[in-house]
Amino acid sequence: MSRATEETNRLMLRARDAMDRAYAQPLDVPALARIAHVSEAHFSRTFRATFGETPHRYLQRRRVERAMFLLRESGRSVTEICFEVGFGSPGTFSRTFHDIVGRSPRTYRKEAAATVVPTCFTMAWTRPSA
Image 1 (cartoon, rainbow, N blue to C red):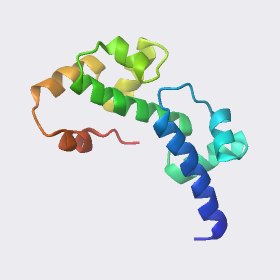
Image 2: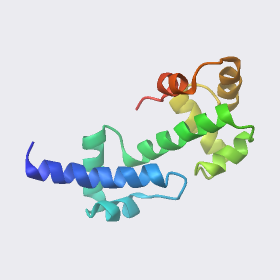
Image 3: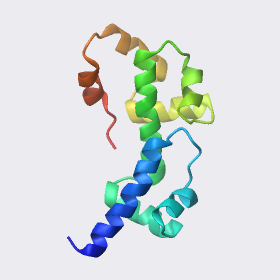
């Protein structure tokens, strides 16, 4: 791997780490590109080439992963969880959750409550794919 490729990967990891830390915050491509010290177009193109999905889709998946945990482990309402993980509306949250997980947040919660399995196994088994 060339030195330039390593540096590019490091910059993309810096932005992805920022998304992992602040997933509930309003993050957009210009802000993430500034974190990676590259232009917006270059950031979007390189992020997708490096991680196999767009920055927006990665952030959505990260938020849904957190929502899955909260739906399993807390008694908070779906609407509260929606806003806590960074979605702007319950409709967008439900649609995105269904697209990624394959069922609605309420259905997911009901099914998760019926299964008693160690959390580490549940997290590995139910991790949404890209």
